[in-house]
Length: 267
Image (cartoon, rainbow, N blue to C red; front, side, top):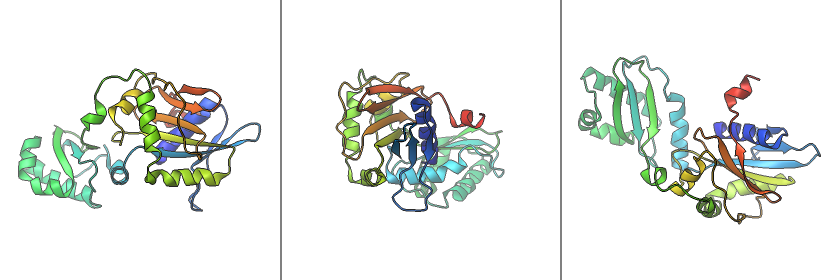
């Protein structure tokens, strides 16, 4: 979520041409994530969220610090797929390293051998597959979730209406109530919801397929929004050049995602 908030802040500031700053400092409950400071004194409240289920999001937070960092106890570089939607044990990393050390010691080099030898261990760790990328590597681990083909393949959407239909249903489910409550509490002139669609996500291909295009197709109608939301931003976490935004005055348009956190740090 921190990465999603950082990207949302940078992209919005570049698009709007005004400061977008962090607001939620965790000192009080119910704070929205970002503030937009317009030059005429108006304020915009921004709540940033991601399209992924709670279990997967918690697992992503556990995996992130260990992705592709050198592990001195291993020789090879490994790719590990976890089962999406299942809880990953808190001690998964240490147990995984021990399993891979044992596999290297026995000379196992492919997924079939490892799955046969450690089936019980893999199930306990919610791992669906392990494979060796290179044996003489730096002991690095690529930790990811198994591919969801329903969300990652299909016909390229010709317009953004399928994406909009999905978003309108997605924003009304009970688990989004906290996002809406924070925006309502802000008292700001505008209430922006910024949705980042990562992989893995809850979204079907009609959503992913729209947002990963170089120029996402625009919906043909305005969104039906809860009263707490006045503006909408939609973007894939993939390295794509543009996202989608909607405001009451201008309607749907694309926005640039070219500036990154690394770029900002070089200024």
